[in-house]
Length: 144
Image (tube, rainbow, N blue to C red):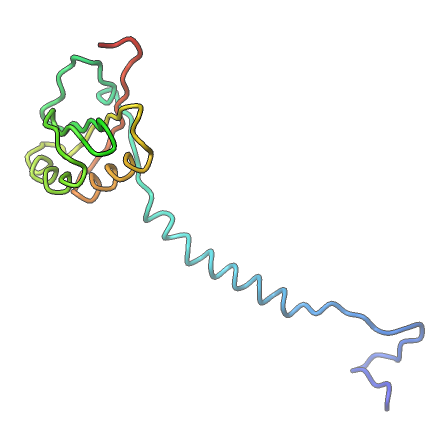
């Protein structure tokens, strides 16, 4: 009775070594739960951007009056429909213009020296202000 091991015979040639699967299964299930909880957050914070034919703007072209034009000039200044405002004042300046725009679309253009953080901050403010569509405008080389 001393060598009884749940319906197994006594080891004839050494100790019986088994891998304990319980911790592996526990960790795997915890990772699955974390991924299930994190997946909706990844889709909720995403921002869909579109590039249409109207988003490509040449220097000297006039903006479409039914949309709002943002030109990020520096890390602290943004031109909203050719009126320069500070980035801090953008949440107050943008909603009235979006309410007046027919399609609530915004074309964003960015200077080369602007940091990525400022660019993303302006995109966030634009989305939170009620923009239905955001297009990233590019300046063609040699234009202007």
